Image 1 (tube, rainbow, N blue to C red):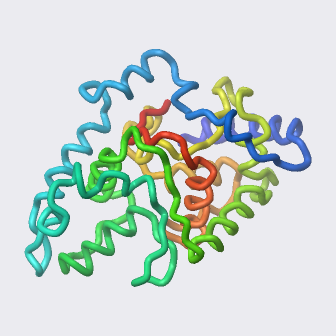
Image 2: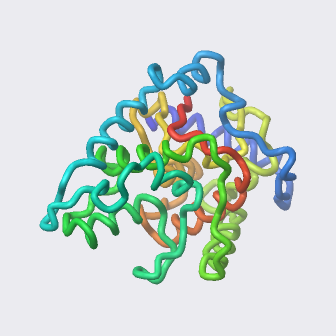
Length: 262
């Protein structure tokens, strides 16, 4: 995000803060809507047509990586999991999930890297690297059209609750919470753009502003920077907790990966 865009965003946020209610309220389940509903006609058409969606290039790269042997084990993802269309169907809809190996909740990117290290004996991919985004988009694509279904796991409840607290906690120099935008003021406008409800239905997404594919954690960091708050590091427990809460908040909504946004 450019400095000009950051200043514009910060000023607009200040206006929203002034109008925001004192306490956030959850969006009723029957009133939830995907960010796709706010897209212009051309952007929506781009997302819905795989031949026009720029993220398709990453999905294709991810398919190649899925079948590519790697690491000291000289093993491909497909050697363990076979056809991703069958074995990965519904997987992205269930993450973040609790990892018995790590003894903590992890998101899909971390799950891919865990497999890469444990099963392939290969160096994990860097966060936001093309390879990790490509594999995540490819795996996520197998769940497109399915409902988001967070695990009913007692080990995950603390993370979901932590994520809820972070979502409603005021932060940064602007002293604003995520909920003030996405729960209390969705449908209004921020710097001429509609305020979405903030559901993670299409990640990784291709943002026209980025001219690139990006993860949900990248988007969360963008928002925190716009609020003039210190963003969580990639893979931080707080970032994963926010993801876990957002997926719970979007439960039952349809996976749209890979999405396109302005």
